Image: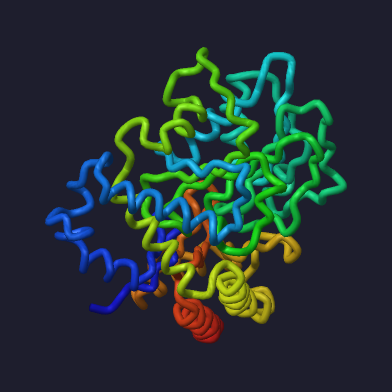
Length: 361
């Protein structure tokens, strides 16, 4: 069977090697005579899988000992609420940098909990860039500063992160976690839905500095980070299949040479497509400013809506999947997460050049 050239924004492409291994183990995981979906989450077999996923992530990201890795449910969207519920105390203010729809949604949830402030934004310029570090005025007494490291809808990505001193830096890294090296010690919390670079939908990774975990009995039990830290993320039944596949994807990432090698591949993949845009003499127009371009989501428009519709229709007919831009802004988007092969990016760039040549005849 020929694999689709999958540029979906999420759920996204998974490594073919991972899918084949899962297929091979589908009916009998760890010699249990059962599928992973049938295992008790309290069993020795699943505990081994669960702990392996956490240990491998710690290794790949060089996570310091003073951090907990939690495997939760609810997606990044639940973290929009859990972060302020756990960290935004009365008399404090939470600061947010707005760089896209998801940071805006995170802010809206925090407003329901306590005082917030927008300390930098690119909203007026249609989220086409990441604000400069000099423009971010961190309140020294803030509960935290929240950012979204990669913006899937608009195709922008942080290249450097703010120095926040004693103020915890919180990052939603759902769409670029594990895509390049990050100094985890600069962050109070990193959270990410798995369905772009880490695995299938259903599990959310939370990397949290231990001093930020406070057992607040006024919070609903499952919304308290302390609950999950004390129970190794096994307070309630976890998404066992998603965690199993997460562990396989992390093994695959190690086999590729780790995060440094993956980053090198990702930069090359994005350059292939950006070159097709930049060399088109304006036929393709990138949404993001060049200094803020994402290596995960390449967003672009054509000169007219008619040209875009024809491009997307011909691309679909040629076997390219998921190139429509987000429904809120339209246009085109190629999501090129870790598992998207370089060859697929080259094939897309070749298709773009061929389409331009034929369209202008």
